[in-house]
Length: 339
Length: 177
Ligand code: SF4
Ligand code: SF4
Image 1 (cartoon, helix red, strand yellow):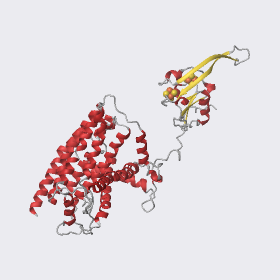
Image 2 (image 1 turned 90 degrees about the vertical axis):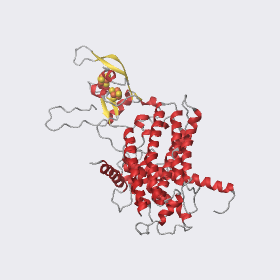
Image 3 (image 1 turned 180 degrees about the vertical axis):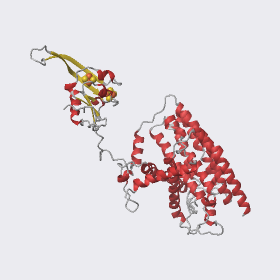
Image 4 (image 1 turned 120 degrees about the vertical axis):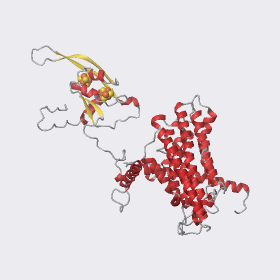
């Protein structure tokens, strides 16, 4: 990189991080939550704010900002106030290792995948804090459910990623992209080797576990409104509720970025030399397109399926996904040695 | 059907609904969701409720005898009735003057009413009717208490009873006008 003063570089990085976390969240909410969900339910969704309701999200933000920041009487005020920020921080930490182009990255960690998997569980702490500090039984149960669910699904998530790591032979996100760009399938290198083809089982497991990590329906037991009001967010209002809401969709966007790096070739598109400088400009756009594709799947599942029961959720993780992902690792390992 | 084929079919259902909503005229025409959606954009467009929809309750004041049956049966106790007795001229010449109950007050609090229709069912004198009108929201909740003149105005919007099937023995009821 060009030598810049430390503070300039830091400012650029902070601005880039904010943009990478918050910019995808808005389109995701509008495109999928407001519009696609409405169309799938044969209705129109928001239509009044802006052309075709496109300013609805701004209207919602304005509404939430006006609301009173309520604290329950018995709440642990400091923990209660801090919890939404802890959740949001985990999304910011996640985006740190995502590469957007050959030189467009925040940090190029050699253990990028490991780091991403580790910090993705930070949000559990925030959710447990919210659940415990609210001094409400619904929040408490919601927090505990969230913790149980996130820990259970962390395992298949990590194990599914293992297959990719074995095949690419590296934990570095940047090198995983390059491995896909330069890979070949049975000697044919025209489209590289996006790992979704060779690691399809891994991709399926990753998508299911990701859905659960994001607590999107059908895995939304922590906020199951018919049982727990809204789980750990029950007592939140105004700005802090908004932070949870933004956190949910920002994390969806970032998990989709990680999925596209691991399985869809990240910022690379077939036909252009991956070392080309063009990708520093084109890369973020390519990533955004891939993110839209992955989140389309996430929201399609969200809209289609009803919520699981708590025990079905745990069964799916421990009895189906974990054995399958272990199997995937074994097969990948054998094939890696054999070829 | 197994779990996985069933889940794929479910995805198909939502995808097809989205497609039908976006492209009601087929894939070659520009998308027009406002035509494809089954909903209407309420304040701009209105649907006509069915004739027997339970919108608001109308009172035919002349028929009411202040018998209080409706007020007592109402699960919400949201009907308030006050009345007094009056002498009415005899039906036949030379008869005794009749006694008649005259309504002083007949209010229904639509902020409490749950539109169960028990009052309409229970009234023995055909004084209460359902009207399909539904646009009577108020900025102040106290204004949802409709007094007897307001309830009487709704009478105009009460549709006629539908005629029964041919061959029915029952006499068709008439809405008093
Ligand atoms: S509809 Fe039911 S709740 Fe309403 S006034 Fe009549 S009896 Fe009462
Ligand atoms: S409306 Fe009917 S039931 Fe109610 S007081 Fe009058 S006559 Fe009686």
